[in-house]
Image: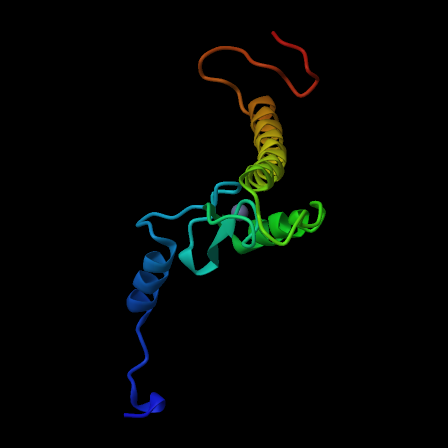
Length: 133
Ligand SMILES: [Zn+2]
């Protein structure tokens, strides 16, 4: 049987293959909440060269964090020491938390805007002018 004789996997089979690759049944980007497995990937927190710990990210957030890793210092030696491995992991976590802080700030500002534009059923809230009644 040559390659072209194989039946093409249907949408559900492709979805199952993606879920299997991600290793979870309900994947979600840790930064933006994207849950379409077609655009989710595993990001190596320390960088693929320095550690195997991964988190699920959407392609956009994965690309941004991988680009951040290009600003990390070059390898200290040909052989990775446990201390350098830990340091690389912490640098990756720091990048992740910086992006997470920005996401949380955007969510908070969105909620504040929504709160200003919707009368609160539980009592009076801030108004567009910023005054409370
Ligand atoms: Zn994302």
